[in-house]
Amino acid sequence: MYSINVTPLSDSSWLRSKATDPYGRAGTVRLAYQVSTIQVAILTDPTPAPDTCPVWIQPLDLLARDGGTADFQDFRARFKEESDLKLLMLSDRASTSERERQRELQDRLTPYSFAEHRLHRFLNAQLRVGDRVVDTYRGRRGTLLDPSPPPLPHISSPMIVRFDEPYVTGDPQWLKGTSTISAIGLYPTLGLL
Image 1 (cartoon, rainbow, N blue to C red):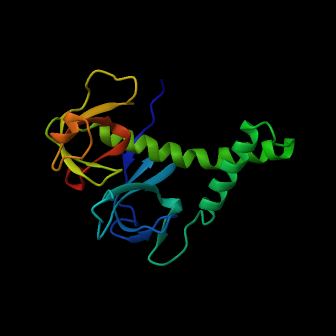
Image 2: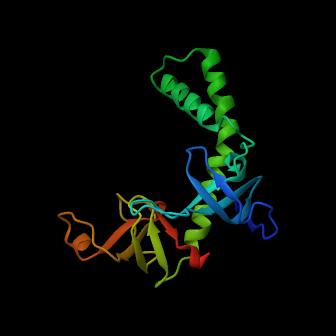
Image 3: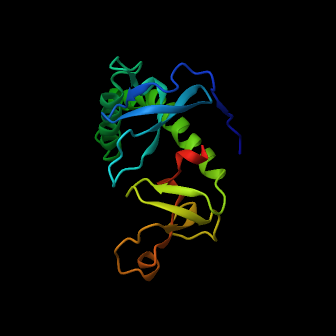
């Protein structure tokens, strides 16, 4: 396994900038990191809705700052095109030129998703028992009880969290507010960053 350096960019001109991501979500850049060849921001939502995570990660090239345009303006269109071509390939209906285009797009897009994923893993690897976390999928906040429980076959990178508010399901653990969930869905709260 090789390691990827994740380096804080404490002098980034992006810090405290208002920015909009490719999906139209506006936020403020709180921290920036160099992850391999890509610079990645940690943003906060100025007015988080109850069901959204107030902290998220986005490569700087994909952000439009203060009403400007992003360096990689057509990211969403290229991402959709690559996904559509991949489906054609999986169904064995792609022509040679479509296969070449899919590989070209994949090579262009992969560094961004890799950097985003790597920074998220880096942040979660620093979590300790008692740290406050946010569930990306439901916007719930909780306290980390166990950052490395025994592996489960249906949950990748499990962590055990006691949420401030229980989630209504038939699972008795969820009803008590304690849950084993994937670290993929967790972010540290901004106070830990």
